Image (cartoon, rainbow, N blue to C red; front, side, top):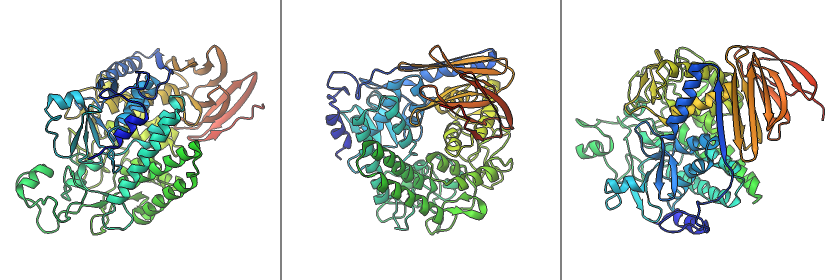
Amino acid sequence: MIHRFSALLIAIGLGVPFLRSEEGGPPFPFEIETAATFQSSDPALQRLHDTAEARIRENIVPFTPSMKVLVEGGGYPNAWLETQPMGGEMFAKRDLRIALNNQLIFMLAQRDDGRLPGMVVSGATAREKGWDHEPPEGHIWMPEADLLADFEMIQGFCFPEPAWKMYHWIGRDRGYLQKLHEALAGFDAWLWRTRDSNGDGLLETWCVWDTGEDNSTRLESRWAPSRWPFEKPPGAEGVPDPSNPEHLKRYWFRGGPGPTGDEVRVPFASMDVMAYSYSARATLAKIAAELENGEETRWRQRAEEVRQRLIDGLWVPERSACFDLDREGKRLPELIHNNLRCMWYGIFTQEMADAFVDEHLLNPEAFWTPVPLVSIAIDEPLFKNAPGNNWSGQPQGLTYQRTIGALENYGRHAEVTRLGRKLLPVLIRNDFKFAQQLDPKTGKASGQKKDGYGPMILAALEYLTRLHGIHLDVAAGEVWWSAVDASGHDFTYTQTWGERNYRLQCKDGRFEGFAGDRLLFACTAGTRVVTDLDGKVLKLIGIAPKATTVTLDVDGRRVEATLPPNAVHKPSLGD
């Protein structure tokens, strides 16, 4: 198999076997550094932040002789497509080189047919296990890149938007952007060439690991294989059959008797995989606009085609949610958190997102359990409060991580606040441990691996910035300054991005924003102030769960506003 990474290595001047630029440095060189700090008068919150900062750095490992990558951690030593591009971009506010590597490592391992690996294993790990000589089935050893790429599952696709944001973080390197364009276009083409096996216009998931829902009752009860390193779906001619005991053990990870009759219900027409394509195409439209290559309109239209197919085929208006279909077109009835994933990818309309959030996400009988974000609604028969790595019920760190972007995509900022107020105290109560899962009733830490799970750590750090800190939306050219509590602890948050230095100070229920030593504004705590990158105030956002009245002072002018949850107020400040 020829790999697209060979062309990428040549195009960006990388030597073999080391990944380096023509000047001997890392690929796509830049000189921008980032740093973030937080100091709080609340000792528990301070300890949570400091512990998270220390533990996330333990997940940085050498992947090639010249590239370090932020791995998933918590006992998971590799880089997965569903976690690490997103996690890398979140880490950009601390280290841009690591953040960029978390995108490049997947682009380097892309196959010539456009398929991206679901997982990438470092050369050191591959050699330790002897996989450089005898790769496992579905894995390909890449000696020039010193990587082992896994193609036995799609494993989510939290890649297009983070990779697009990295273009802005690193100074808008157009060579990088062109390679990202090729990677996304290639993967989208592979999806539609391969994963619409019955030609109904709905992309399919073929195995449990395609969507990363390990051990999920909704998949395993329908006899979805765990892994599937084939280009034809289960049930096709010439592929493994679960009635064969050896096949059952090797691909379904089960012993005992196999299914009888028509119990195998995969392939599923999948909301997740449809969202993968939408995200790729929507990002390609943004890239096309930036490159001015004349393809923006075409990609936007193609993205809308995918959205409309999702609405027509999988959205059920009377239930305000999407539901997958089995191989015969029968709708799978259980309400699942994957609707939130669709929101992260941006495929829902505003009306769809609001309906799902209001009717299901905030419903204590569905997803808003004492510790929210169960994987399957708690009132569904397939809900299972299982510890370990199990997507049948317990809230996952990865879901907390993804839900931030899912809600912010649709202006539901106050719900992010509510989740942060739920999660951060639970982590403090759990003695500052970062497990993969949480019990939905007690918040007790759960997971089959060890402490230090990266998605949970990054989720904690991101919620902290949304409640008590600074967040840079680099692609939009915005700085978010947030101080949700009108009383309680005082804090200072700083964010450095190259020559730009931002500082937020909150004391006695009022916060100030600075660019360098220049005061930008002062405002009552309980809201978010959004500025452009130069510090010009653009708007206020109601991030508190209840209406909040605030006063904003800018350049000697005062504005008073009452902000209901999620309200956006654009103050009249003159020129």
